[in-house]
Amino acid sequence: MHNPARYLPKRPTASYWLKDLKMPVADPLPSRTVDAAIIGAGITGLSVARRLQELKPEWQIVVIEGRQLCGGATGRNGGLLIPGLQDGWTSTAARVGEAQTRKLFRFDLQNAVALSQFVSSYISNGGEPDPFLHSFKDGCLNAFATEAQRDFWTAEVEKMQDAGACGEGMFTILDRKQVAGMLGTDKFCGAVQIKPGFRVWGARLVLALAQDVLAKNKSPPPGKAGGRVNFCTETLVRKVEFASESGGSWTSPPLHRIITDREGDGPGTLTARNVVFCTNSHTRTLLPDIPIVPVKNQVIVTQPISPFPAFDGCVSANDGYEYFSAREDGRLVLGGMRNLAPDMAVGNGDDASLDPVISTALRSYIHDTFPHIRDKVEIEMEWAGIMGFSADRLPFVGPVGEDRPGVFVCAGYTGHGMPRAFLSGYHTAEMVAGVKVGEDFPEILLPHGRLGKAERVPIDTYKSSS
Image (cartoon, rainbow, N blue to C red; front, side, top):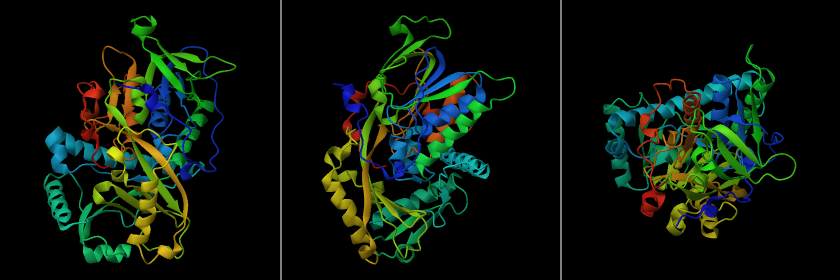
């Protein structure tokens, strides 16, 4: 039985990424009908808002968030952006076909380029805060624990290269000695080195996108005055009554009613011509027929380590259940190990508490893997974040269906949101605005034909890594 209360945001554990960040003051809910209401204020929601503002500067747009800006997965993840398929080439191509697999692969690379261009332009124009988007010199190592993993990924890389999916030098197979020389540990028997690979401070990125949007509020294009984007944070959406349910007209455009927990001065409800759900793990609270479930993960960050290891990159190990990265200030960030939790934390949407078994394992991992720095490591913070896993391991990006016109979803990244969220939001905004979507968009991400009752999806479907 679907229980919406399970997926409502709670007061979460404190995230390192959100510490000491100054958030914009929350706006009241607009009292009049808006052109678009975006639910969720992470990378996806802000990307939708920014692109919609570009396409429809005359529109009234509101971003509604139950917490602060980037209070969900964006502000609670491991801070990594690694382009590429979260599953192997063979398994993905078997599911969606080689053409769409190649398109998904390119989409991730294009996402990294688009984000890099935004950050570069933002910083060059004096924007603050700096999102610290950095291309790792040593890329990302998909590390092997066994010879079987090495043989599997060697074959996968050869298939991708034969298919022309990746550029020269993007994937390199390293042996045990090469990996030990880079990481200072003999724990791994080899790795696939992936380039490019990036680290980024997701919460700062969202603030940068918000600052860009707010600046355009103040200086709209000539002849396009009247539009505005409002940020209504600390405002939890309890329910959305779609046009057919609220007595709204089916004439174009229909009106949808958004009911929030906002109290005090001003309205607690809002009507909107278009609604965009950028709610990831919380999507089923409001759209129960979309098969996305919450999956909990935990992350720790160390105090700065001195002298800092020379490795400038990140590592994914144990089939993605462990990952760590070197940060710009000498810290290490380590996350994962949900494979130690009951049911691999599938269906667990509680980021207000920590699993002590995983907490112990994360701390032991650094000491066991890197004996040369074990005496220099002091844990600074630990927090939990909630991913949104879809049944087919791909996000839903686009209109929900003809029976709900003006309703869109952009959610369900299955632990692979950083490489896809920015452009997914960008193209969702194009669909909302009714303009032609770029040809780089993978059509396999459209919700049409993929929706169904989530209760019918076996729990094992969601237990893969990421």
